[in-house]
Amino acid sequence: MHPSHHLKPEWVKTIRKTAPLAEQAGMLHPDQLKLIYEQGWFKFLVPEVYSGLQLALPDMVRLEESLAWANGSLGWVVTLCSGAGWFGGFLSPKIAPALFANPHLCLAGSGASTGTATIVDGGYIINGHWKYASGVHHATHLTANCIIKNGDETVLDKQGNPLILPFIFDRKDVILLSAWKFMGMMGTGSDAYEVHNLFVEKDRCFKIDPEYTVIDAPLYKYPFLQLAEATLAANISGLAVHFTDLCVPIFAEKTSGKKLSAAQKAIMSQSLSSLTHELNTSRAEFYQAVDASWQGCLVGNATSLDLVSGTSRKLAKAARECVDQLYPYCGLQAANPDTEMNQVWRDLHTASQHSLLTFN
Image 1 (spheres, one colour):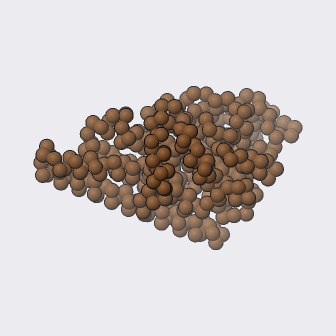
Image 2 (tube, one colour; image 1 turned 90 degrees about the horizontal axis):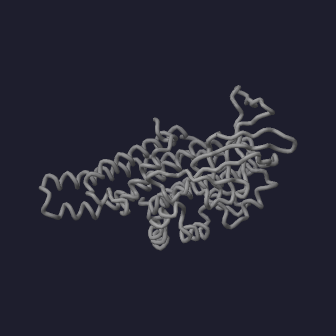
Image 3 (spheres, helix red, strand yellow; image 1 turned 180 degrees about the horizontal axis):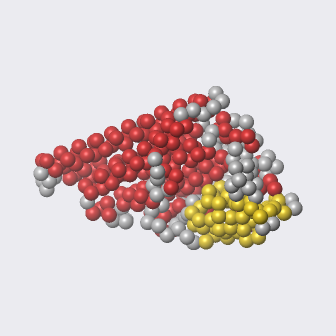
């Protein structure tokens, strides 16, 4: 099914009309944010008890692909920030209700363990610097992974490795730093942040583990790795579908003109048809795996997890190859940074650099 099926045309119009302005500003446009807040897209995975949508995983993944199809930066920010909302299933009930009640809730953060949390009476002292926090300029709170310290000693887990736990901070306690200087995803504002000698209480620390969930629902027992893989793959897929959509009128114009030979026209038409088919085949396999894993989760044990991981990587690869093989036929407008096609190309080749889907 085409990603446009899940979005109202007026939503897409608003998102795409303001996309160039978001790129210029280095963060989502106010009209885009207004739509996100109205539709509750930052609360895709927030528990219902905290006024969240608590969407079923297959529904959420399809919506995220659709939003990435509408615009790469918006889709990415919604995916990463709503993904952090999933932590609501593990946060202390003492702080979660007030935190998630904010109508402009947005949780940004980083999965890198580039901070330390030193144990003190009643909590921890946090120090650290984290890069690439998508949506950080709109964040009400930020999350970060920290290596746990007891004095000068690093605390070890049961396997003898440094113990790493996530924390949640208030936006007012975090320093933002300009750091996102890449060719694509320019509207995500994925800048860096840091904290210095910040005291946080114990309930600001949580564990992402089904054994520690505080919300008894299948969504919060689904493995985090496959959730992350699937949502990132869906974004890359949405960008590739957007690119193929933009190819259709360009290819139609070129193949109806007189500049190309009959053989060249046939190559272009066949390439668009076959590559679009291959992309959609990978999409279908991916969603079949996601749906199957979710059905297993609903009855107590997520299944097909290896398939989710495998088809996520296969889809990301198919998306990159589809776009790269069609790109040379699109002419100089594909290389013009002021065009929508170039924006999609830049966004896809930036988003697909995420290390989670790099290796088979």
